[in-house]
Amino acid sequence: MKGIYLSLGSNYGDRAENVERALLWIEEILTDLKKSEVYETKAVHGFGPAYFNAVVFGYTELDYSCFNSIIKGYERESGRTPDAKIRNEVIIDIDIVVWDGEIIRPTDFSREFFQIGYKEIKE
Image (cartoon, rainbow, N blue to C red; front, side, top):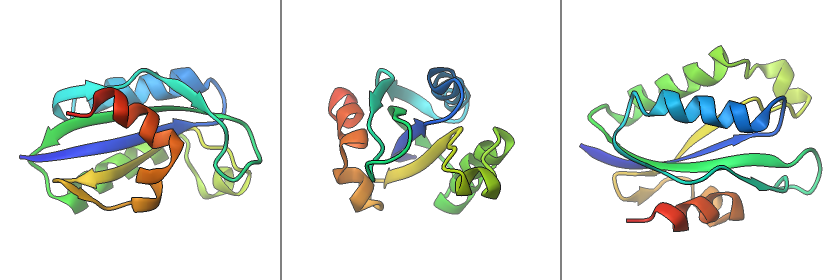
């Protein structure tokens, strides 16, 4: 079993609902789930709408590629398209930040949008 931390964010539409819906979906694909509250942060680059965020910790038996494909598929099914990305409309973004104890997205790991939720649920 691999322990992983995921970062979730949404800046478009019903941001809270987008994150809550993704959290419910993640509950079905990870075990021993811990999740932060949903909270709001400013856009990292200082422009565009604020994000609603959450951080999740849980376990999976899948390998990285398979798990990442599943979450990116969820993003696409939820409306994350190349056109939406150009317009800076993030319906839902889910990223693996820590995989099996290794920080694989160090920039995201250090950002406020991740650290708020991470500190809330850190083991």
